[in-house]
Image (tube, rainbow, N blue to C red; front, side):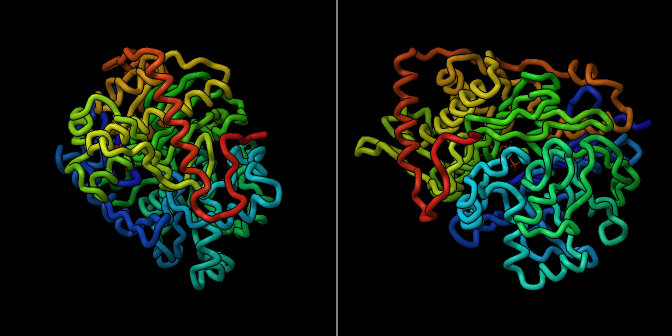
Length: 511
Ligand SMILES: Nc1ncnc2c1ncn2[C@@H]1O[C@H](COP(=O)(O)OP(=O)(O)OP(=O)(O)O)[C@@H](O)[C@H]1O
Ligand SMILES: [Mg+2]
């Protein structure tokens, strides 16, 4: 009798394996970080081999902790950092280049070049996405154009592309020994190569981007059996769910109905609203993405506000400035002062994503005076997350015409009480943290559980959701609006810093 579900959560900074029981409670977990590689300003890479090693380690570790055997798991789901791009040789299993991480800006020139003819929104109708450094398609093109031998290998049919999900499933199901090469619709929707409505690779996009179709995985649903795992610790367990991390959190929060939304506070922040079976195009700087597709059922879509840097700024303050020892110290430091002292930190490290899509923006700290100290910097770091979230909430409400009365949150930063209160204050509405905070891993476990009949329907999942804490706004209106307008001014100071003419027109897209 299989009592549990396993989930691999392969994130930007770490990999976790979590075993859940039927109610969504964690019964076993192991987590390991992997190296962030920064070869030059704007470039971010991961070593795929290291990620695969960490994955095997955390699976074995979490299984051993409770002396679980493969038969204890009904299925395994996978959730992953999205857009991050790997190309590997299908005969040797070796990647031809490091994984190019979603935050990497090296394809800025391609964005500029392609935008010149038809603007930044020329592919929005088919793909739901603006031209940006963020998505996988241009990263594939970069590898094919810059890595010796890659294009020849691709033309010969021996090169496989995958986001982390594809790479993971291929490795898990045998790799060079019969591994399956698939990706789910949510991950495929982040490549800018898939037609949002037909859910098939778009031949025209492939042509314009110069990508041979042979490198691409087969697009499958988010919830079905892809194949049995071949790894000893989970040998034979069906791999049965794939969701990009932000879509997984939407599922983990059981936002199955149109109009339901969540905001995940991790490396970046990602606000997704379910829009049902209709792909709604954004006019206010959001993107359109596939929310999930369970087996044969129709796909559901979402509007998404993607913010590249939030928790990553806390890590930057820790690792690059050394102001704090661990992420949670940011709250203690921020509490040494009563307000931000006029300091605003715009973390446009990878340009700005929603709602600006300014590839050439770069980070700024504005409003510095002799008065400012490290406490103010810490506060400005936390406030940046809340201000950026308000910008995407406003865009979301305009695009969807739905009021977000309460904001459902999750992710690593939501343990930060100062941030959560400030978020409620700056939004002027309640902010809710659910009982289960590991919604990303949970969402992929749910998808896998549905595929193998471990869960019989969505109501069983909805019953698992409950509120842990609610923050209510306490700030005066005048203060709130003053802070927000100063933030807006600071944001404009980050624009057009990098020299890439023609990229990024502020705050307006979709038209
Ligand atoms: N107490 C805290 N206050 C502020 N930020 C925090 C706190 N604890 C963790 N963080 C931040 O939260 C992030 C980790 O959260 P989480 O594990 O949800 O991130 P993630 O985006 O899922 O990571 P990954 O991308 O690796 O999956 C880190 O960026 C970290 O700096
Ligand atoms: Mg994550």
